[in-house]
Image (cartoon, rainbow, N blue to C red; front, side):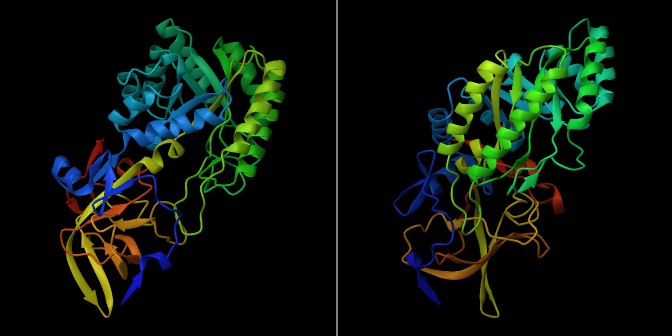
Length: 414
Protein backbone atom coordinates (compact mmCIF):
# COMPACT_ATOMS: atom_id res chain seq x y z
CA UNK A 1 0.00 0.00 0.00
CA UNK A 2 1.38 3.43 -0.93
CA UNK A 3 0.74 6.80 0.66
CA UNK A 4 1.69 10.31 -0.52
CA UNK A 5 4.85 11.48 1.26
CA UNK A 6 3.37 14.85 2.14
CA UNK A 7 0.73 13.27 4.39
CA UNK A 8 3.22 11.82 6.86
CA UNK A 9 5.26 14.63 8.51
CA UNK A 10 6.37 12.87 11.71
CA UNK A 11 9.92 14.06 12.38
CA UNK A 12 11.34 17.56 12.36
CA UNK A 13 12.39 18.36 8.77
CA UNK A 14 15.87 17.08 7.97
CA UNK A 15 16.51 20.00 5.61
CA UNK A 16 20.13 20.59 6.54
CA UNK A 17 21.13 18.46 3.54
CA UNK A 18 20.38 19.43 -0.06
CA UNK A 19 18.81 17.13 -2.64
CA UNK A 20 20.08 16.77 -6.20
CA UNK A 21 18.71 14.53 -8.95
CA UNK A 22 16.60 12.65 -6.45
CA UNK A 23 19.48 11.94 -4.09
CA UNK A 24 20.60 13.35 -0.79
CA UNK A 25 23.72 15.54 -1.01
CA UNK A 26 26.40 15.27 1.68
CA UNK A 27 29.60 17.28 1.45
CA UNK A 28 28.46 18.61 -1.95
CA UNK A 29 28.31 15.07 -3.37
CA UNK A 30 25.30 13.00 -4.36
CA UNK A 31 24.94 10.04 -2.04
CA UNK A 32 25.64 7.38 -4.66
CA UNK A 33 28.79 9.21 -5.76
CA UNK A 34 29.93 9.58 -2.16
CA UNK A 35 29.42 5.85 -1.59
CA UNK A 36 31.64 5.12 -4.58
CA UNK A 37 34.27 7.50 -3.22
CA UNK A 38 34.20 5.85 0.22
CA UNK A 39 34.54 2.46 -1.44
CA UNK A 40 32.14 0.51 0.75
CA UNK A 41 28.98 0.59 2.78
CA UNK A 42 28.14 1.05 5.58
CA UNK A 43 29.79 4.34 6.48
CA UNK A 44 29.32 7.52 8.46
CA UNK A 45 29.72 10.83 6.65
CA UNK A 46 30.16 14.18 8.40
CA UNK A 47 29.60 17.40 6.48
CA UNK A 48 32.30 20.06 7.06
CA UNK A 49 30.07 22.92 5.92
CA UNK A 50 27.35 21.95 8.39
CA UNK A 51 29.85 21.70 11.25
CA UNK A 52 31.14 25.18 10.46
CA UNK A 53 27.59 26.52 10.12
CA UNK A 54 26.55 25.16 13.50
CA UNK A 55 29.49 26.82 15.27
CA UNK A 56 28.78 30.08 13.43
CA UNK A 57 25.12 29.88 14.45
CA UNK A 58 26.12 29.55 18.08
CA UNK A 59 28.70 32.33 17.87
CA UNK A 60 25.98 34.65 16.57
CA UNK A 61 23.86 34.02 19.67
CA UNK A 62 26.39 33.58 22.47
CA UNK A 63 27.96 36.62 24.13
CA UNK A 64 31.46 37.13 22.63
CA UNK A 65 33.14 36.65 26.02
CA UNK A 66 31.56 33.20 26.58
CA UNK A 67 33.89 30.42 25.45
CA UNK A 68 32.67 27.47 23.42
CA UNK A 69 34.19 24.04 24.13
CA UNK A 70 33.70 20.83 22.16
CA UNK A 71 33.07 17.67 24.21
CA UNK A 72 34.84 15.27 21.89
CA UNK A 73 33.24 12.15 23.36
CA UNK A 74 30.32 12.97 21.06
CA UNK A 75 32.50 12.28 18.03
CA UNK A 76 36.21 11.53 18.54
CA UNK A 77 37.03 10.88 14.87
CA UNK A 78 40.47 12.55 14.49
CA UNK A 79 39.52 14.46 11.34
CA UNK A 80 36.41 15.86 13.04
CA UNK A 81 38.40 16.81 16.14
CA UNK A 82 40.99 18.52 13.95
CA UNK A 83 38.30 20.59 12.24
CA UNK A 84 36.55 21.46 15.50
CA UNK A 85 39.83 22.45 17.17
CA UNK A 86 40.08 25.32 14.70
CA UNK A 87 36.47 26.42 15.21
CA UNK A 88 35.93 26.34 18.97
CA UNK A 89 37.81 27.82 21.93
CA UNK A 90 38.66 24.57 23.67
CA UNK A 91 38.11 20.82 23.83
CA UNK A 92 36.94 18.62 26.69
CA UNK A 93 38.26 15.06 26.82
CA UNK A 94 37.30 12.06 28.93
CA UNK A 95 40.25 9.68 28.58
CA UNK A 96 43.97 9.58 27.95
CA UNK A 97 43.31 8.40 24.39
CA UNK A 98 41.01 11.34 23.72
CA UNK A 99 43.65 13.65 25.17
CA UNK A 100 46.19 12.33 22.66
CA UNK A 101 43.78 12.87 19.75
CA UNK A 102 43.06 16.44 20.87
CA UNK A 103 46.76 17.27 21.25
CA UNK A 104 47.55 15.67 17.89
CA UNK A 105 44.83 17.86 16.38
CA UNK A 106 46.65 20.97 17.58
CA UNK A 107 44.31 21.92 20.42
CA UNK A 108 45.74 24.48 22.85
CA UNK A 109 46.58 22.67 26.14
CA UNK A 110 45.57 25.79 28.05
CA UNK A 111 42.04 25.33 26.68
CA UNK A 112 41.87 21.55 27.16
CA UNK A 113 40.01 20.05 30.11
CA UNK A 114 39.93 16.43 31.25
CA UNK A 115 36.85 15.01 33.00
CA UNK A 116 35.79 11.53 34.08
CA UNK A 117 34.99 9.76 37.34
CA UNK A 118 37.64 7.04 37.03
CA UNK A 119 40.83 8.63 35.78
CA UNK A 120 43.76 6.23 36.08
CA UNK A 121 47.01 7.49 37.54
CA UNK A 122 48.66 7.08 34.13
CA UNK A 123 46.03 9.38 32.65
CA UNK A 124 46.52 11.93 35.42
CA UNK A 125 50.25 11.90 34.67
CA UNK A 126 49.51 12.45 30.97
CA UNK A 127 47.30 15.41 31.81
CA UNK A 128 49.78 17.04 34.19
CA UNK A 129 52.63 16.58 31.72
CA UNK A 130 50.52 18.12 28.94
CA UNK A 131 49.53 21.08 31.12
CA UNK A 132 45.77 20.62 30.67
CA UNK A 133 43.07 21.47 33.18
CA UNK A 134 41.91 18.44 35.20
CA UNK A 135 38.33 18.37 36.47
CA UNK A 136 38.60 16.75 39.90
CA UNK A 137 35.86 14.24 40.65
CA UNK A 138 37.00 12.76 43.97
CA UNK A 139 39.17 13.36 47.02
CA UNK A 140 41.50 10.56 45.86
CA UNK A 141 42.49 12.58 42.82
CA UNK A 142 43.82 15.40 45.02
CA UNK A 143 46.40 13.14 46.67
CA UNK A 144 47.29 11.44 43.41
CA UNK A 145 47.84 14.78 41.65
CA UNK A 146 49.91 16.17 44.52
CA UNK A 147 52.30 13.23 44.21
CA UNK A 148 52.40 13.44 40.41
CA UNK A 149 53.03 17.19 40.50
CA UNK A 150 55.94 16.72 42.85
CA UNK A 151 57.33 13.84 40.81
CA UNK A 152 57.13 15.74 37.50
CA UNK A 153 57.98 19.13 39.01
CA UNK A 154 54.93 20.54 37.24
CA UNK A 155 51.89 22.18 38.84
CA UNK A 156 48.62 20.33 38.32
CA UNK A 157 45.95 22.68 36.98
CA UNK A 158 42.62 21.70 38.54
CA UNK A 159 38.96 22.61 38.57
CA UNK A 160 36.27 20.93 40.66
CA UNK A 161 33.47 19.07 38.95
CA UNK A 162 30.52 19.74 41.21
CA UNK A 163 27.55 17.42 41.65
CA UNK A 164 24.89 20.02 42.41
CA UNK A 165 21.71 19.40 44.34
CA UNK A 166 19.48 19.98 41.29
CA UNK A 167 18.85 18.33 37.93
CA UNK A 168 18.36 19.65 34.40
CA UNK A 169 14.60 19.34 33.93
CA UNK A 170 13.57 17.50 30.80
CA UNK A 171 17.04 16.21 30.01
CA UNK A 172 17.48 12.92 28.20
CA UNK A 173 20.29 11.93 30.56
CA UNK A 174 20.62 13.40 34.05
CA UNK A 175 24.22 13.99 35.13
CA UNK A 176 23.64 15.65 38.51
CA UNK A 177 21.35 15.85 41.51
CA UNK A 178 21.02 13.07 44.08
CA UNK A 179 23.66 10.33 44.30
CA UNK A 180 25.86 10.36 41.20
CA UNK A 181 29.25 8.88 40.26
CA UNK A 182 30.16 12.19 38.61
CA UNK A 183 31.88 15.00 40.45
CA UNK A 184 31.90 15.88 44.13
CA UNK A 185 28.68 16.57 46.01
CA UNK A 186 28.21 20.32 46.44
CA UNK A 187 28.09 20.04 50.23
CA UNK A 188 31.53 18.35 50.24
CA UNK A 189 33.20 20.86 47.91
CA UNK A 190 34.34 23.31 50.64
CA UNK A 191 36.33 20.51 52.31
CA UNK A 192 37.75 19.47 48.94
CA UNK A 193 38.83 23.06 48.26
CA UNK A 194 40.69 23.05 51.57
CA UNK A 195 42.53 19.87 50.54
CA UNK A 196 43.38 21.39 47.15
CA UNK A 197 44.95 24.37 48.90
CA UNK A 198 46.87 22.16 51.34
CA UNK A 199 48.19 20.04 48.46
CA UNK A 200 49.42 23.12 46.58
CA UNK A 201 47.46 22.36 43.42
CA UNK A 202 46.75 25.20 40.99
CA UNK A 203 43.01 25.77 41.46
CA UNK A 204 41.27 27.45 38.51
CA UNK A 205 37.53 26.95 38.84
CA UNK A 206 34.45 24.77 38.59
CA UNK A 207 32.64 22.55 36.14
CA UNK A 208 28.91 21.88 36.50
CA UNK A 209 27.12 19.61 34.02
CA UNK A 210 23.49 19.08 34.97
CA UNK A 211 22.28 16.92 32.06
CA UNK A 212 22.19 16.35 28.32
CA UNK A 213 19.85 16.21 25.30
CA UNK A 214 17.43 18.93 26.40
CA UNK A 215 15.14 20.70 23.94
CA UNK A 216 13.65 23.15 26.46
CA UNK A 217 15.39 26.53 26.48
CA UNK A 218 13.72 27.50 29.78
CA UNK A 219 15.11 24.42 31.53
CA UNK A 220 18.62 25.04 30.20
CA UNK A 221 18.47 28.68 31.32
CA UNK A 222 17.30 27.66 34.79
CA UNK A 223 20.13 25.13 35.11
CA UNK A 224 22.69 27.72 34.02
CA UNK A 225 21.38 30.23 36.55
CA UNK A 226 21.45 27.70 39.38
CA UNK A 227 24.92 26.54 38.36
CA UNK A 228 26.21 30.09 38.39
CA UNK A 229 24.70 30.80 41.82
CA UNK A 230 26.18 27.60 43.24
CA UNK A 231 29.63 28.38 41.82
CA UNK A 232 29.44 31.88 43.26
CA UNK A 233 28.76 30.46 46.74
CA UNK A 234 31.48 27.82 46.47
CA UNK A 235 33.99 30.42 45.28
CA UNK A 236 33.96 31.90 48.79
CA UNK A 237 35.97 28.88 49.98
CA UNK A 238 38.25 28.67 46.95
CA UNK A 239 42.00 29.09 47.52
CA UNK A 240 42.31 31.33 44.45
CA UNK A 241 39.94 33.47 42.35
CA UNK A 242 37.84 31.54 39.85
CA UNK A 243 39.30 31.74 36.33
CA UNK A 244 37.23 28.99 34.69
CA UNK A 245 33.50 28.40 35.11
CA UNK A 246 32.14 25.64 32.90
CA UNK A 247 28.33 25.81 32.99
CA UNK A 248 27.98 22.59 30.99
CA UNK A 249 25.77 22.18 27.97
CA UNK A 250 22.71 20.00 27.64
CA UNK A 251 21.62 21.43 24.28
CA UNK A 252 19.56 18.78 22.47
CA UNK A 253 18.75 18.00 18.86
CA UNK A 254 15.44 16.54 17.57
CA UNK A 255 15.62 12.80 17.09
CA UNK A 256 12.07 11.56 17.43
CA UNK A 257 8.57 12.36 16.09
CA UNK A 258 7.09 15.49 17.64
CA UNK A 259 10.42 16.99 18.74
CA UNK A 260 11.33 20.50 17.62
CA UNK A 261 14.71 22.21 17.36
CA UNK A 262 16.01 24.12 20.36
CA UNK A 263 15.45 27.89 20.43
CA UNK A 264 18.86 29.43 21.10
CA UNK A 265 17.71 33.04 21.54
CA UNK A 266 16.62 32.86 25.21
CA UNK A 267 19.76 30.87 26.05
CA UNK A 268 21.95 33.55 24.52
CA UNK A 269 20.07 36.26 26.41
CA UNK A 270 20.41 34.34 29.67
CA UNK A 271 24.15 33.87 29.19
CA UNK A 272 24.55 37.57 28.45
CA UNK A 273 22.97 38.38 31.82
CA UNK A 274 25.21 35.86 33.60
CA UNK A 275 28.25 37.26 31.83
CA UNK A 276 27.41 40.76 33.09
CA UNK A 277 27.08 39.42 36.62
CA UNK A 278 30.37 37.55 36.35
CA UNK A 279 32.21 40.72 35.34
CA UNK A 280 31.26 42.20 38.71
CA UNK A 281 31.14 39.11 40.95
CA UNK A 282 33.90 36.89 39.50
CA UNK A 283 35.88 39.31 37.33
CA UNK A 284 38.68 36.85 36.48
CA UNK A 285 36.32 34.05 35.46
CA UNK A 286 35.75 32.99 31.85
CA UNK A 287 32.31 31.46 31.35
CA UNK A 288 32.40 28.27 29.27
CA UNK A 289 29.70 26.30 27.49
CA UNK A 290 30.59 22.65 26.78
CA UNK A 291 28.71 21.07 23.87
CA UNK A 292 29.14 17.81 22.01
CA UNK A 293 26.02 16.40 20.41
CA UNK A 294 24.66 19.86 19.54
CA UNK A 295 27.79 20.76 17.60
CA UNK A 296 28.14 17.59 15.53
CA UNK A 297 24.97 15.51 15.74
CA UNK A 298 22.98 17.03 12.88
CA UNK A 299 25.97 17.21 10.52
CA UNK A 300 26.34 13.44 10.27
CA UNK A 301 24.54 10.60 8.50
CA UNK A 302 24.88 6.84 8.65
CA UNK A 303 24.60 5.22 5.24
CA UNK A 304 23.86 1.54 4.66
CA UNK A 305 22.94 -0.40 1.52
CA UNK A 306 19.90 -2.64 1.06
CA UNK A 307 21.05 -6.18 0.32
CA UNK A 308 17.66 -7.91 0.41
CA UNK A 309 13.97 -7.11 0.27
CA UNK A 310 11.42 -9.51 1.67
CA UNK A 311 7.81 -9.56 2.79
CA UNK A 312 6.76 -11.38 5.94
CA UNK A 313 3.03 -11.64 6.56
CA UNK A 314 2.36 -8.39 4.82
CA UNK A 315 5.24 -6.32 6.24
CA UNK A 316 8.10 -5.23 3.99
CA UNK A 317 11.58 -5.80 5.42
CA UNK A 318 14.53 -3.98 3.90
CA UNK A 319 17.62 -5.91 4.98
CA UNK A 320 20.73 -3.70 5.08
CA UNK A 321 24.44 -4.41 5.37
CA UNK A 322 24.67 -2.26 8.51
CA UNK A 323 22.82 -2.18 11.79
CA UNK A 324 23.09 -1.90 15.56
CA UNK A 325 26.75 -2.98 15.60
CA UNK A 326 27.52 0.32 13.86
CA UNK A 327 24.70 2.52 15.15
CA UNK A 328 23.57 1.28 18.53
CA UNK A 329 21.64 4.44 19.39
CA UNK A 330 19.51 4.35 16.22
CA UNK A 331 18.57 0.76 17.02
CA UNK A 332 17.06 1.97 20.30
CA UNK A 333 19.53 0.09 22.47
CA UNK A 334 21.54 3.06 23.76
CA UNK A 335 19.44 4.59 26.50
CA UNK A 336 15.93 4.46 25.04
CA UNK A 337 13.27 3.06 27.38
CA UNK A 338 10.58 2.86 24.72
CA UNK A 339 12.08 2.46 21.25
CA UNK A 340 11.47 5.34 18.82
CA UNK A 341 12.62 5.76 15.25
CA UNK A 342 15.39 8.12 14.28
CA UNK A 343 14.61 10.07 11.09
CA UNK A 344 15.40 7.73 8.19
CA UNK A 345 15.06 8.02 4.43
CA UNK A 346 15.94 6.16 1.26
CA UNK A 347 18.73 8.50 0.26
CA UNK A 348 18.73 7.45 -3.39
CA UNK A 349 14.95 7.88 -3.76
CA UNK A 350 14.27 11.27 -2.17
CA UNK A 351 11.94 12.38 -5.00
CA UNK A 352 9.58 9.41 -4.68
CA UNK A 353 5.92 10.46 -4.90
CA UNK A 354 4.68 7.63 -2.70
CA UNK A 355 5.75 5.66 0.33
CA UNK A 356 5.32 2.17 1.69
CA UNK A 357 5.36 1.01 5.28
CA UNK A 358 8.60 -0.89 5.78
CA UNK A 359 11.11 -1.85 8.45
CA UNK A 360 14.86 -1.53 7.94
CA UNK A 361 16.81 -4.28 9.66
CA UNK A 362 20.50 -5.12 9.77
CA UNK A 363 22.38 -8.35 9.07
CA UNK A 364 22.71 -9.53 12.67
CA UNK A 365 20.96 -12.60 14.07
CA UNK A 366 18.97 -10.69 16.68
CA UNK A 367 15.55 -8.97 16.61
CA UNK A 368 17.24 -5.97 18.24
CA UNK A 369 18.98 -5.16 14.93
CA UNK A 370 16.36 -2.66 13.83
CA UNK A 371 17.10 0.75 12.26
CA UNK A 372 13.54 1.68 11.27
CA UNK A 373 10.38 0.08 12.63
CA UNK A 374 7.34 0.27 10.33
CA UNK A 375 8.20 3.66 8.87
CA UNK A 376 6.77 5.37 5.79
CA UNK A 377 9.67 5.13 3.34
CA UNK A 378 10.08 5.53 -0.39
CA UNK A 379 9.64 2.15 -2.14
CA UNK A 380 13.17 0.72 -2.16
CA UNK A 381 14.98 -2.10 -3.87
CA UNK A 382 18.23 -3.98 -3.42
CA UNK A 383 21.11 -1.57 -3.98
CA UNK A 384 19.34 1.54 -2.68
CA UNK A 385 21.03 3.48 0.13
CA UNK A 386 19.34 4.00 3.47
CA UNK A 387 20.23 7.15 5.41
CA UNK A 388 19.89 7.55 9.17
CA UNK A 389 19.93 11.27 10.00
CA UNK A 390 21.10 12.89 13.27
CA UNK A 391 24.06 10.50 13.29
CA UNK A 392 27.03 12.80 13.87
CA UNK A 393 27.18 12.09 17.60
CA UNK A 394 27.48 8.87 19.59
CA UNK A 395 27.59 6.70 16.48
CA UNK A 396 30.55 4.55 15.49
CA UNK A 397 32.50 5.03 18.72
CA UNK A 398 29.46 4.22 20.88
CA UNK A 399 28.57 0.98 19.08
CA UNK A 400 29.69 -2.67 19.48
CA UNK A 401 31.37 -2.92 16.09
CA UNK A 402 32.89 -6.35 16.75
CA UNK A 403 29.54 -7.93 17.62
CA UNK A 404 29.04 -11.16 15.61
CA UNK A 405 32.17 -10.50 13.57
CA UNK A 406 30.67 -8.36 10.83
CA UNK A 407 32.93 -5.78 9.14
CA UNK A 408 33.47 -2.43 10.84
CA UNK A 409 32.16 0.70 9.17
CA UNK A 410 34.18 3.60 7.81
CA UNK A 411 33.93 7.28 8.76
CA UNK A 412 34.58 10.18 6.40
CA UNK A 413 34.65 13.95 6.77
CA UNK A 414 33.50 15.56 3.52
